[in-house]
Length: 232
Image (cartoon, one colour):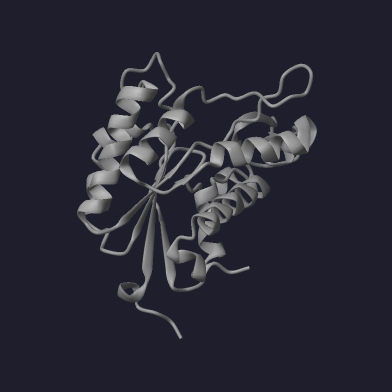
Protein backbone atom coordinates (compact mmCIF):
# COMPACT_ATOMS: atom_id res chain seq x y z
CA UNK A 1 0.00 0.00 0.00
CA UNK A 2 1.37 3.38 -1.01
CA UNK A 3 0.77 6.27 1.31
CA UNK A 4 -0.21 9.72 0.11
CA UNK A 5 2.40 12.39 0.81
CA UNK A 6 -0.01 14.01 3.29
CA UNK A 7 0.01 10.86 5.42
CA UNK A 8 3.77 10.69 5.62
CA UNK A 9 6.23 12.11 8.12
CA UNK A 10 8.58 14.47 6.32
CA UNK A 11 12.20 14.95 7.37
CA UNK A 12 13.87 18.04 5.95
CA UNK A 13 17.67 18.06 5.94
CA UNK A 14 19.65 21.31 5.97
CA UNK A 15 23.41 21.42 5.81
CA UNK A 16 26.44 21.50 3.55
CA UNK A 17 28.25 19.29 1.03
CA UNK A 18 28.73 16.43 3.51
CA UNK A 19 24.94 16.05 3.63
CA UNK A 20 23.81 17.05 0.13
CA UNK A 21 22.76 14.98 -2.86
CA UNK A 22 24.99 14.78 -5.95
CA UNK A 23 24.37 14.11 -9.62
CA UNK A 24 25.48 10.79 -11.07
CA UNK A 25 28.18 12.67 -12.98
CA UNK A 26 29.98 13.15 -9.65
CA UNK A 27 29.60 9.53 -8.53
CA UNK A 28 30.87 8.05 -6.22
CA UNK A 29 30.73 11.35 -4.29
CA UNK A 30 27.72 11.26 -1.96
CA UNK A 31 26.42 13.10 1.08
CA UNK A 32 24.95 11.09 3.94
CA UNK A 33 21.58 12.74 3.36
CA UNK A 34 21.49 11.24 -0.13
CA UNK A 35 20.96 7.71 1.24
CA UNK A 36 18.99 8.37 4.43
CA UNK A 37 15.65 7.60 2.77
CA UNK A 38 16.74 3.98 2.25
CA UNK A 39 16.87 3.53 6.02
CA UNK A 40 13.19 4.29 6.61
CA UNK A 41 9.97 2.63 5.53
CA UNK A 42 7.42 4.27 3.23
CA UNK A 43 5.89 6.23 6.12
CA UNK A 44 8.86 8.63 6.05
CA UNK A 45 9.84 10.97 3.21
CA UNK A 46 13.26 12.64 3.16
CA UNK A 47 13.72 16.09 1.62
CA UNK A 48 17.43 16.73 1.28
CA UNK A 49 17.72 20.52 1.09
CA UNK A 50 21.43 20.61 1.99
CA UNK A 51 23.63 22.59 -0.41
CA UNK A 52 27.38 22.49 -0.96
CA UNK A 53 29.53 25.33 0.38
CA UNK A 54 26.82 26.66 2.71
CA UNK A 55 27.13 27.62 6.35
CA UNK A 56 24.34 28.18 8.84
CA UNK A 57 24.62 31.87 7.95
CA UNK A 58 24.76 31.73 4.15
CA UNK A 59 22.03 29.07 3.88
CA UNK A 60 19.75 31.26 5.97
CA UNK A 61 20.65 34.54 4.25
CA UNK A 62 19.96 33.03 0.83
CA UNK A 63 16.36 32.45 1.90
CA UNK A 64 16.60 28.67 1.79
CA UNK A 65 15.11 28.19 5.24
CA UNK A 66 12.15 30.38 4.32
CA UNK A 67 11.30 28.05 1.43
CA UNK A 68 11.43 25.02 3.74
CA UNK A 69 9.20 26.72 6.30
CA UNK A 70 6.57 27.24 3.59
CA UNK A 71 6.30 23.44 3.23
CA UNK A 72 7.15 21.93 6.60
CA UNK A 73 4.16 20.91 8.71
CA UNK A 74 3.24 19.87 12.21
CA UNK A 75 4.87 16.57 13.14
CA UNK A 76 7.63 16.87 10.54
CA UNK A 77 11.34 17.09 11.39
CA UNK A 78 14.13 19.51 10.55
CA UNK A 79 17.59 17.95 10.80
CA UNK A 80 20.27 20.64 11.06
CA UNK A 81 23.98 19.96 10.39
CA UNK A 82 26.27 22.93 9.82
CA UNK A 83 29.84 23.65 10.83
CA UNK A 84 32.26 22.92 8.00
CA UNK A 85 31.75 26.25 6.25
CA UNK A 86 30.95 28.26 9.35
CA UNK A 87 34.67 27.79 10.02
CA UNK A 88 35.69 29.79 6.90
CA UNK A 89 37.13 32.73 8.84
CA UNK A 90 38.19 34.58 5.67
CA UNK A 91 34.71 34.51 4.13
CA UNK A 92 32.37 37.01 5.81
CA UNK A 93 29.36 35.60 3.96
CA UNK A 94 29.82 32.22 5.62
CA UNK A 95 31.89 32.62 8.77
CA UNK A 96 30.25 32.47 12.16
CA UNK A 97 31.89 32.53 15.57
CA UNK A 98 31.06 29.36 17.53
CA UNK A 99 29.54 30.73 20.73
CA UNK A 100 27.87 33.82 19.28
CA UNK A 101 26.82 34.04 15.62
CA UNK A 102 26.89 30.26 15.01
CA UNK A 103 24.45 29.71 17.87
CA UNK A 104 22.41 32.74 16.79
CA UNK A 105 21.89 31.37 13.28
CA UNK A 106 21.23 27.81 14.44
CA UNK A 107 18.56 29.16 16.76
CA UNK A 108 16.75 30.63 13.75
CA UNK A 109 16.32 27.11 12.37
CA UNK A 110 15.01 25.88 15.71
CA UNK A 111 12.50 28.72 15.98
CA UNK A 112 11.38 28.26 12.37
CA UNK A 113 10.71 24.54 12.81
CA UNK A 114 8.85 25.02 16.06
CA UNK A 115 6.75 27.83 14.58
CA UNK A 116 5.19 25.22 12.28
CA UNK A 117 4.88 22.51 14.92
CA UNK A 118 7.84 20.59 13.50
CA UNK A 119 10.66 19.04 15.52
CA UNK A 120 14.20 20.45 15.16
CA UNK A 121 17.13 18.05 15.62
CA UNK A 122 20.68 19.40 15.83
CA UNK A 123 23.49 17.30 14.34
CA UNK A 124 27.14 18.16 14.99
CA UNK A 125 29.26 18.13 11.81
CA UNK A 126 30.72 14.86 10.57
CA UNK A 127 34.45 14.70 11.23
CA UNK A 128 37.03 15.21 8.50
CA UNK A 129 39.61 12.56 7.69
CA UNK A 130 42.70 14.04 9.30
CA UNK A 131 45.29 12.03 11.17
CA UNK A 132 48.40 13.10 13.05
CA UNK A 133 51.83 11.77 12.16
CA UNK A 134 51.48 9.17 14.91
CA UNK A 135 48.20 7.93 13.45
CA UNK A 136 45.70 9.56 15.79
CA UNK A 137 42.54 11.23 14.49
CA UNK A 138 42.64 15.02 14.70
CA UNK A 139 39.61 17.03 15.84
CA UNK A 140 39.03 19.54 13.02
CA UNK A 141 35.88 21.39 14.06
CA UNK A 142 37.19 23.36 17.02
CA UNK A 143 34.48 24.75 19.30
CA UNK A 144 31.60 24.35 16.84
CA UNK A 145 30.39 20.97 18.16
CA UNK A 146 30.68 22.25 21.73
CA UNK A 147 28.69 25.38 20.86
CA UNK A 148 25.97 23.30 19.19
CA UNK A 149 25.74 21.03 22.25
CA UNK A 150 25.45 24.11 24.44
CA UNK A 151 22.60 25.45 22.31
CA UNK A 152 20.83 22.09 22.36
CA UNK A 153 20.74 22.22 26.16
CA UNK A 154 19.67 25.84 26.25
CA UNK A 155 16.83 25.30 23.81
CA UNK A 156 15.95 21.74 24.88
CA UNK A 157 16.55 20.39 21.38
CA UNK A 158 17.56 16.77 20.72
CA UNK A 159 21.11 16.47 19.43
CA UNK A 160 22.96 13.75 17.52
CA UNK A 161 26.68 14.07 18.20
CA UNK A 162 27.82 13.00 14.74
CA UNK A 163 31.22 14.59 15.32
CA UNK A 164 31.99 12.24 18.20
CA UNK A 165 30.40 9.23 16.53
CA UNK A 166 32.35 9.69 13.29
CA UNK A 167 35.54 10.58 15.16
CA UNK A 168 35.40 7.32 17.10
CA UNK A 169 34.66 5.32 13.97
CA UNK A 170 37.45 6.91 11.92
CA UNK A 171 39.88 6.47 14.79
CA UNK A 172 38.99 2.78 14.97
CA UNK A 173 39.36 2.29 11.21
CA UNK A 174 42.65 4.17 10.96
CA UNK A 175 44.23 6.31 8.26
CA UNK A 176 44.19 3.74 5.47
CA UNK A 177 40.75 2.19 5.92
CA UNK A 178 39.06 5.59 6.16
CA UNK A 179 40.16 6.29 2.58
CA UNK A 180 37.41 3.85 1.58
CA UNK A 181 34.84 6.18 3.15
CA UNK A 182 36.12 9.47 1.78
CA UNK A 183 36.61 10.54 -1.81
CA UNK A 184 40.02 8.96 -2.20
CA UNK A 185 40.29 7.63 -5.75
CA UNK A 186 43.37 6.46 -7.68
CA UNK A 187 43.99 7.92 -11.16
CA UNK A 188 42.39 6.22 -14.17
CA UNK A 189 39.96 4.17 -12.07
CA UNK A 190 36.84 6.36 -12.14
CA UNK A 191 35.61 8.09 -15.33
CA UNK A 192 34.28 11.04 -13.33
CA UNK A 193 37.66 11.61 -11.66
CA UNK A 194 40.21 10.45 -14.24
CA UNK A 195 43.06 12.22 -12.46
CA UNK A 196 42.12 10.64 -9.14
CA UNK A 197 41.11 12.41 -5.94
CA UNK A 198 42.40 12.84 -2.40
CA UNK A 199 39.53 14.48 -0.54
CA UNK A 200 39.43 14.33 3.26
CA UNK A 201 36.12 16.16 3.64
CA UNK A 202 33.64 14.63 1.21
CA UNK A 203 32.30 11.11 1.35
CA UNK A 204 32.05 8.46 -1.30
CA UNK A 205 29.23 5.92 -1.48
CA UNK A 206 30.39 3.59 1.28
CA UNK A 207 31.11 6.50 3.59
CA UNK A 208 27.70 8.06 2.94
CA UNK A 209 25.94 4.86 3.99
CA UNK A 210 28.11 4.41 7.07
CA UNK A 211 27.70 8.01 8.25
CA UNK A 212 23.94 7.85 7.59
CA UNK A 213 23.85 4.73 9.79
CA UNK A 214 25.49 6.76 12.56
CA UNK A 215 22.66 9.30 12.24
CA UNK A 216 20.18 6.42 12.48
CA UNK A 217 21.96 5.23 15.64
CA UNK A 218 21.52 8.72 17.05
CA UNK A 219 17.79 8.68 16.29
CA UNK A 220 17.44 5.41 18.17
CA UNK A 221 19.48 6.66 21.12
CA UNK A 222 17.31 9.78 21.37
CA UNK A 223 14.22 7.59 21.22
CA UNK A 224 12.64 9.88 18.62
CA UNK A 225 9.19 8.68 17.53
CA UNK A 226 10.40 8.19 13.94
CA UNK A 227 12.61 5.34 15.14
CA UNK A 228 9.67 2.98 14.68
CA UNK A 229 9.89 3.59 10.93
CA UNK A 230 13.57 2.65 10.63
CA UNK A 231 14.17 -0.47 8.55
CA UNK A 232 16.92 -2.88 9.54
